[in-house]
Amino acid sequence: MKVSQPIRLTMVGGGSWATALVKILSENNVSIKWWLRKTEDAEHIKKFGHNPSYLSDVQINTRKVKVCTKIREAFRDSQYVVLAVPAAFVGDALTGIKPEHFAGKRVISAIKGMIPGANQLVTDWVSEQYNVPVERMSVIAGPCHAEEVALEKYSYLTIASLDPTCADNVANLLRCRFVQTTPVDDIYGIEYSAVMKNIIALACGITRGLGYGDNFQAVLVSNAMQEIRRFVDAIYAKHRDLSGSAYLGDLLVTAYSPFSRNRTFGTLIGRGYTIQSAQAEMNMIAEGYYAVKSIYEINQEVNVRMPIVDAVYAILYEKSAPTIAMNSLKELLT
Image (cartoon, rainbow, N blue to C red; front, side, top):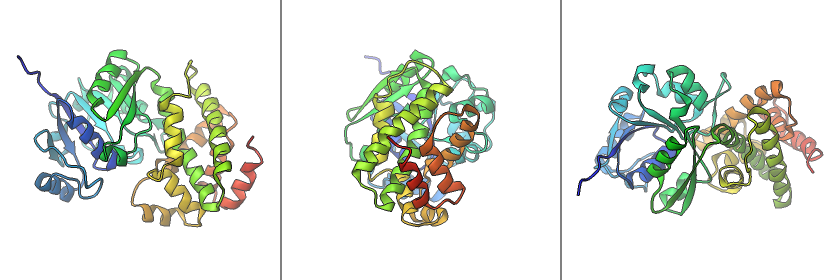
């Protein structure tokens, strides 16, 4: 019986989500070149088989995973490139990479954020910067915390692409004994929803930090779904069921889970931490901090009703006191 050749894949990023994805992909017939910025982390993984900085209990299959710190080496001969770094730093991570290095490759975005300043989705930014056709790109979404992947808790992912074959292929790469996957075509709706849910989780954290209870958070989240629908429909009108796991499911887990870095960041802000002290306390990037500025600025053109986004933006970028901003917001919820 002929054994099929493994899929050749590049993983860009050394954080918890990148580590979790490496674990998932290693369950299948995939050969991975894993690029990490930190030389000491790369050397540690080579020697001991686990990431010392994130999800250190995850054992890395070094027979399938080659760790490197040179981005061009990581890109060489790969069929797929997975981007799993915070949106604010994806440009830095790809320093030295040119359009020709992406030629012929399919790109998978595992980033639930927007490019700050450019206010672009990651897929649009990569397509523009590196001439990658959008049809060769896909997005990973769904309620799937890296920490639970590390524990092999059964999880669900949604893979979105404009090309159904691309979505199917990526879904097959990520489907394993503890992860179920579903391919869909709503790449922009899912990408914007993933950005929005981080902002909502941040708002939920702020209210937690201020001492609001479960009753209020339930109202906040249900209003948030209406807010997401208004915005996404205005940006990219399409028939979609926002009760699906890639939309509502992802929002719920990010808003309620103790593993949610956006909720944690918001909780610290609600308790009176400055932005700088909250970021230092977490030692992780909360995508919602950057995303709310992008979504707020986009909405100056779209002009849909988004009171939750407005409140979070006021707190983080206009130095409004969380107590005052949330007192105003609660009068606008139903």
